[in-house]
Length: 423
Image 1 (cartoon, helix red, strand yellow):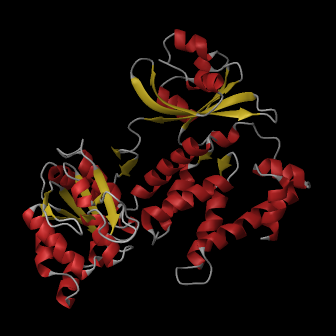
Image 2 (cartoon, one colour; image 1 turned 135 degrees about the horizontal axis):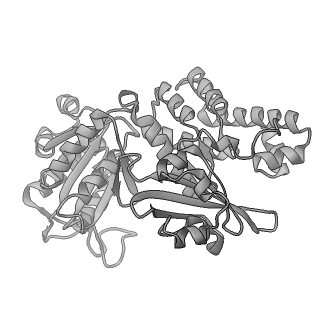
Image 3 (spheres, rainbow, N blue to C red; image 1 turned 180 degrees about the vertical axis):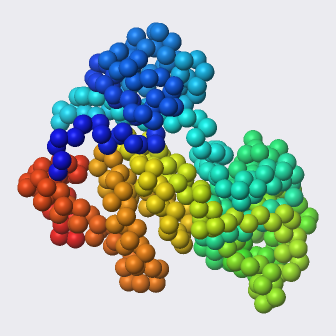
């Protein structure tokens, strides 16, 4: 282990701005990226207290001071010198007694990525293909025509449907979703159409609204529509044609008013030709078709998504670890058969396994393992991560010569270290 380097050297080439202050709010370090983002030379702030900098108009408020006050991670939008808006995530570094020793803040310009928000979900897109898709989706959002979203598993079909809902005239109404592939014919009928009093054994005493009724005034998202049972397709078509539903066990119709968005990773037209999907329902729901490209066809989005998920992990776990631009770029070389879902899970694993900063060699090791063990082999990603953990622990043990010191460096308990070594 090289102990001669500057304590902040691992932040020096990081793409995000890094701002470090001590337990009294005195500025200890800012990296070159922070100077570029903020427009403030390091010599203007290093050595100065954040209270003084706020009072002097450098910042409208301080992440560091909020962290010191609350003793927990803080995420804010900050205005620098009255004009530049940034996102700032501050995390406390505490000693064994829980006392804050310093605060490390990660700063990103507000325009660093194109993030289309939708509630707690968001679309991150910079590639021409996705920008064109979102442009079309934005036009479609204003109208109640059905939208059929096609794309491989994990490409973000539900997130896009929420994005459309938030831009529609129904945005203040409910957004409800159901996966048609995971429920049996009878359960799906119950979920969609509801049931009346005493309709069947185990039913709620007063009956229950179905999703088609509960989503009135809003949007209903039907995922994996290609797997909907044939009998349910008949009922759904009738409901869409008449804008009425009849609860199971009742005789009267009830009015509904919904916007329908559907998604599938299958070719619906081929299912129509095979006779497993009704042609009349297909032509009723096809409306506007949107196809989300897989990650391998939008590789320029991968680094943006990786940094976005890394930032989410900082907010979730409260440790402002650095993520090198080289590591983000390397991720573009993998095919990502599981698309965004796989990338998101992979980034969380990297975040957990990394030390204060993510080194390129850590990413390369796992990437090589992923390339070696393609889908269909007996080695799962979880097993690959376990192997990487064991290798990394052995490396740190060799460098430190002490299990306790190795555990401290890796940020885990000694007992956890020994358990992971055993596999």
